[in-house]
Image 1 (cartoon, rainbow, N blue to C red):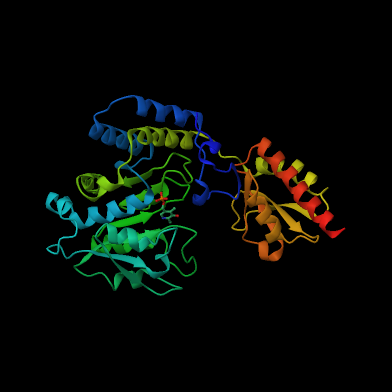
Image 2: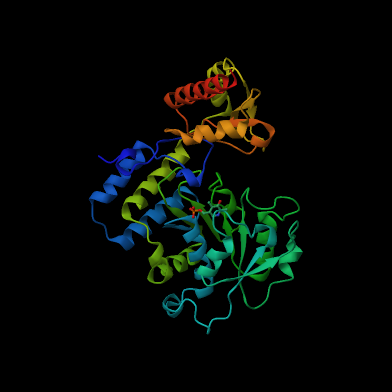
Length: 370
Ligand SMILES: *Cc1c(COP(=O)(O)O)cnc(C)c1O
């Protein structure tokens, strides 16, 4: 059996939330079983993609769906789809100069880097980004005035990474797209609501498999049947380099089923788990812990631990990361002396390990002072 030690890797405790740099999330036993079933059997692959897509579309109350390898692949393939419009010639010659309708209208404040710039994925799909509006604002009119005969689609990024202030909402983008009869693609990679954006009238909506859905590495494109057919056609072209395995197709499908059925851990339940953690941390000299709600007002509670002794928050954070297991925390408020612990992906055993590690770090601090 392979393990962390096989490759000289450190075990990681993730008290930071959902982070791509740590592998985002852990999959459930049921998802593992679905992956195993996929890995151990043969399938007519094109049927597998069509039927899992139809199954998910039914669950998500939309016309059709295609599982892809990542949300990034979903962006590139959707862009290629709206440029090629079902042409096999285009699938074989995705960057041909005979096709000039390649402009992808994007609010300027949505042209972000989520780990990779959105623009790189648009370019990979053969599109050219045309930014609408300004760094701090974009309205429906800003999009509207830039539509030309070469506009292939409007792309809307729904994410905490984007500028939030003075930005049009999805419904306003839908109105512009419908007025000009051009498709609207919504990248909702990390969003939790799998129904909202297709219901708002978006033509294609993209999700990441391992973020909110907590599936294996995968992506999902859902929406209007004609567009999904075009997305699927890219499998004969650029999407071959973004292929997803049958194990993850089935694992991801199971993850969506579970995601829709499961109740999310409530903020109240997080508070209950945090209470003993916070009271033990409060016994450690140099640390003061309280439970706080998520800054954006979501139903998420975290332990906010203030460094009040000799050791600073950044020093403690560094020591937590350097040991094995490596403990990752939310560092956004380290400059204010605060370390946040997000327990959504942390179990009881791991919480005990975090406490004893904090005790060791703070005791060492005391010894240094003496
Ligand atoms: C994470 C993210 C992506 C990419 O998702 P992957 O599945 O990792 O490719 C795309 N867009 C946004 C807004 C994201 O947050």
